[in-house]
Length: 323
Image (tube, rainbow, N blue to C red; front, side, top):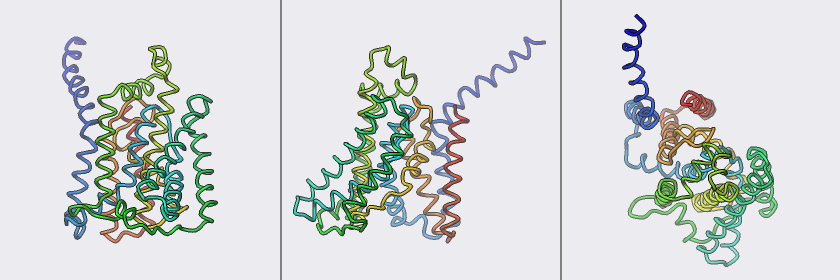
């Protein structure tokens, strides 16, 4: 009797084992496609090419932040400072450009500001052994404070057209932020899949102590991870400044929550060691498509905030169920 039960149950268990990894890989993509189909039926102008480009352009900032956040969460950490880093990088790069520095140099300086801010977070987390939540919560506050101090709390209007092009221009009919987003994700995909650094990131997220025992320099890797997250925030800050034609000290507020939600929706586990960068971009697009669709359906902004909050909770719930 028990033998028959065991034989009968085995195909079911085998099927579940096959379906779970398949869902982890394609589940969010299926949800994105279904969401697009529903909005195509009920939301006017959703399927127009101009709206599709607008979705990609609007999501580019969050996508760039989420690319760096993916690295951090893969190691089991968190980075709450990316929104403030974005603001500081934007303000500094615009101020340098307006002072006569070549715009390319000014934009590079904004990216470097993000890298340095991330490196400090990484050092305090990896070497000083402080919790990443506490470290990045503190840096979220002081980085935005610096942005307000150096700008006197006012937007710094951007004057250089080349700088503006990188945030608000188009190339062959496609907004330039989309190109920047694509380059970031191609580079991040290559890093995570084909480099030793990428394998070390997964190993640390899977088991930090085991990774250390195998010879991986955990502290150095973590510093690089947080530095890259800061670099992505710096790049996002430069793009944001070009888009709004100013360096805004209050830019990027709550952007870190959008980035975290996108990463978790995309299948990266909060406990670390599991996730893919291609999943992150799907998570970004789900949030962008949802926001765009709600706007086209004339849903009140306050209700949109409620929906966004629920999406974040659902993202964490999905991560728990996957684990």
